[in-house]
Structures are given as C-alpha cells and as structure tokens.
Image (cartoon, rainbow, N blue to C red; front, side):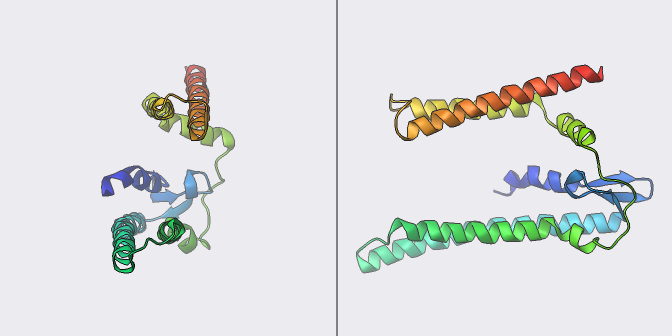
Length: 194
C-alpha cells in the first residue's frame, strides 16, 4: 500500500532543489525560490512521508472498520443500511485524508511564508520545459494502456455504446486523444531542443 505513494513522495521532494548554499524551496516547483537549509528540507520531507504512512494506515483501517460496522449492523438488525451510508462513510474517510494531505503538502509554504525569496517565479516556458523533461513516453504509454482496459471493460458485454459503457468508451477516447497530444507535444519539445 505504501509503495503506491512513491510518486507523490518524489513530487513533494522535487520542490526542494539543490543550491550553492543548501536548497531552495519552490512550491509546486514553480513559485519564487526560498533559501532553506538541508536540515529544513529533510524535516519537511520526513514530516510529509510520515503523514503519508499514517494516512495510508488510517484510511485503510477506517475503511475496514466501516465495512465491518456495516456488516455487523446488517447481521444484528437483519436488514441492510442504504448504500448512501457506505458512500457517506467512504467520503468522510477521503475528505479526512485529503485535508491532512494538503495540510502536510503546504507545511513548507506556511512556515516559510515571511522568508525572503531568492529570485522570481518560473515562467510558463520554464514550467513547460520541466514538465516535458520529467514526462516519459512510458508514462504516456501506461495512460494509453488504461484506455485500452476501459475499452475492453466497455466491450465485455458486447454493447460498447449503450448505458454506462458509453461513458467508459467516451472516457477511453478522450484518454487516447490526450495521450496523442502529449506525445506529440513532448516530441516537438525535444526536437526543438536539438
């Protein structure tokens, strides 16, 4: 379960860039840089990673408790609660997770709010360059593969263009278009650099 957060951990850590005097913090990798020490960087990253660990176990535990509670109620009362109760419970768990996530993600920005910046925020061109440098064709292929799975799911009953299957088919088509656009944009960006 915790391995699924590796990408999120990397995105958080990427906000801290090495500098001649230690590190600079750029919120979402694009805001104005703020000088920080290596100890501050390590503390922010360990705090965020610790939150993810506790949140994963808490969300998983909360989901199990919710499921067991609903099953216990159904057994004791001889009737099921409306499905809405399950969705409300899962929604509450998700809201708690996301609130903690954003609180933990924004901890450096809150603590460094009054500190002087060391330069300007990145331009749109610099942000685009960073995005395409980090984006791989493998990631695009994985997204396109997800589209193939959606098409297979929609076609499983033989009625790909009816009911909910139409939604899955439309979503897969949009995903294919997005993947093609991103692959073309990445190729064009790389060809302009040479």
